[in-house]
Length: 630
View 1: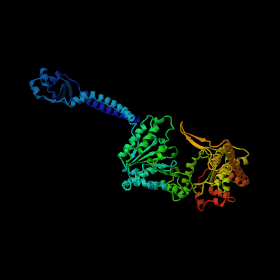
View 2 (view 1 turned 30 degrees about the horizontal axis):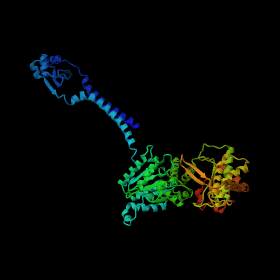
View 3 (view 1 turned 180 degrees about the vertical axis):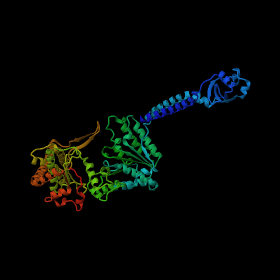
View 4 (view 1 turned 60 degrees about the vertical axis):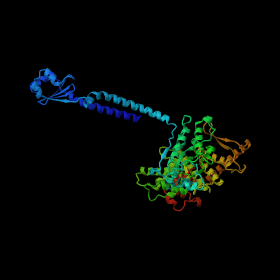
């Protein structure tokens, strides 16, 4: 709409300029007096006329005193004959200068034709412009079958990414280097009878860098790179998706060797036979065409298809068989070393203070993906800019961790005096139980400042990344989750809604211990219940019971037993260490936030040695927020 208005204004501007030009052109003769032929003859006899210019039937009379006039004559008769008929003497005619100008060319065009032609031209141009807009819409309507894949040429160095720009995912990069070798030196493999892989499926949770790795493969191989989203294939018209797939692979074969990257392939690659349209379902037709293009009759094309998804469980089995996606590369969440390397990549070209310790940031961010770390660095830069700093310091980076995890501080969300007291005792209960239990992670921060949806929070972090969790750790987490609930009941002999989320977390964890992890002593070591995803009429997660009602009653008893034992354990700790609980609660009411160093000083008498901060960490933690959540 804005473009239409802009073009319309341009056309109107041109029209006004042309009209003004014609107005000025016509205004030159408009003010001249009109005289008759007889008057010209009389004035010529009197010797007042210097010369006359003749243009068709128009006369321009120039007098000796410098004045001008205009007149008209018959078109077919000569001016000298006309003047003679009006009584001009023959001697005077010889002395009179008469200049004849050709009026059939430019003057006629400017004075006669153009004033009428220009409006028609402008109207025709306006109509053509409108028709072009309509034609553009028709072209877009008829171009549904064309692929919308974007091509990144190998000559575009500005957008080129290599494996050096991708931190972490070492195993994935090693696996994908073979693909690069296939694209760069295919004859080396063909000579040994090896065939090029048809497809590579990148699997991993959101934010781990699947798209970035695909671009790095194209950058390393230095080949054209087509990228498209799975949702861009499917339209409301049947057959459009399959047509776009054909067009995409046709373009790719013309640019072979090349890479075709399909992001979020689960949008079209879901298991067939789950919809209402049968074989005429648009998504299924698109998937069928992808299967044919990847491993059909034409199997000699030097085109590698790379796809990314975080939902491999819903993909059609035909996509995952050899000959289609031959390689399945898993990208995991980065460990501490990978997180440090990712931070170094994202901190590049940003002014960094000398006191920044990226290793400390990596230790505080377990479970963060590459996208989370990128957001963390960006939030740190924004915080530094708000403070009018010229460098990003450790303080801003650590504050940004908390903001990424829980959200910004809700300074306007003020608690009443009673609510503040309850929140302080509640969070002190969480922190005290986490400190006493040996298998719980150490506490890094306790706060009653609202952040996100949390009115208060106790944050704890593991000392190292964990891939396996023991039953003792789960039981400790159960007790820590119920620490706030037990504290409210013990101190106030009253319960509030503040513990609702803690109860939900504890109940889900206890049920997993029984049904998924086989950690119940009264039930056999097996899993109970099968979870299925129903996509018949929208997404629905259902659980199919593969056990009897008698076993279901035992499961409920065991879940209740885990919860009851954890509550009693938390209650006993609260009761035994009431003095330290009161110390923590009063400190929270006073300062609202307790950092790790101050927390360890308050509980120095009962703090286990293995949970003390590492040497040198006290200086890094002083005055800075840290992260972990309960």
